[in-house]
Length: 399
Ligand SMILES: NC(=O)c1ccc[n+]([C@@H]2O[C@H](COP(=O)([O-])OP(=O)(O)OC[C@H]3O[C@@H](n4cnc5c(N)ncnc54)[C@H](OP(=O)(O)O)[C@@H]3O)[C@@H](O)[C@H]2O)c1
Image (cartoon, rainbow, N blue to C red; front, side, top):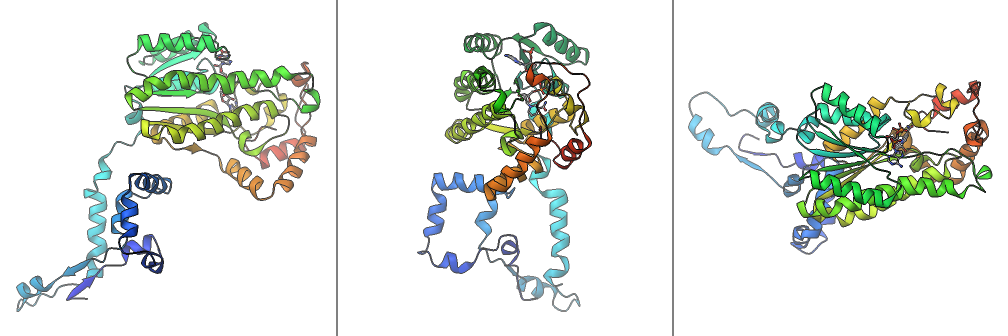
């Protein structure tokens, strides 16, 4: 190794591609194919999903040769020998990683992503939306707070301003499409740029199908706000975002869209519709610079879950923790943000749907209809030991 040191294997260690596979292709075909614009984009997206830098592909088949002949000639008679590459390569690499890697100096913080940016947040008068608005403003962003209750929005705005931030309020009923057109018109009149949209306003209904047969409006109400309201907001802002060739939309979906909990058919279907719409539209808009993140939110302690009293004993995350997921969506713009249980639910359903149905049916029996779902109030309604145990086992799922 002191004459010609070969360091050909490092890249292959990271990505073991059987060379026979590549050799089977006509010479140059792979290289040419990878240079096609469409293939380049697929390659970039695929690597991004795995967190691998795009540039590495150029070096996958590289055989590096370190020629030491000149050095050896210069050192002749000095009594100093060229050390083996293995003896010092790690030190050089370490120095480069710590001090010279250009990626080290990029601002990847939430503040860097949101400072000075205008972010429309729906449902910002309460719960998750309010907490997210406060975090965005604290990091230097400008939240535009949208909901129906003007008094609560004003309260949020005041709290933000008291902390030194800036916010604007817009009252709108997002289950009314005319109201959305009006409010987006107002927003675009008053702000030169809208950088991001967080579709967070939503309503949940927990009622089994047996009690829903004469309540078709439950399905209409959830679709109207959770699905139509969200896509109308997005579509109203899309011309602006496409023109600027920049925009990010964060949709607050639910772990329910991955785990199919019983009694949530109206709610889960409306969130699943939003997920599907986003998956389709997301691929169409890549070229326009508009991106989407879907957050499959677990159970969060907010006014939304208050009517279901058994949830008082369930493990939940706080609105503050839920808002951190929105901040992460804004910072790193991933395609989805999931909990482990949500992903497990999705995979399990794909692999063994009948077995999953059996588990969900057990949960259907263990967790009864709430008094609220029957249009009643029952302050004595409490979770049993069995219910609490199952809720802890499947942390974050709303049963
Ligand atoms: N809490 C959970 O466990 C949980 C779990 C998974 C997903 N999520 C999702 O997270 C999002 C936020 O929920 P949250 O828990 O924070 O609930 P929340 O505290 O009840 O807040 C709901 C927000 O939506 C607004 N809103 C409701 N109807 C509206 C309408 N027609 N037009 C405009 N705004 C409307 C409400 O404001 P106004 O009443 O003032 O209009 C409020 O600001 C929802 O999309 C929900 O589905 C929640």
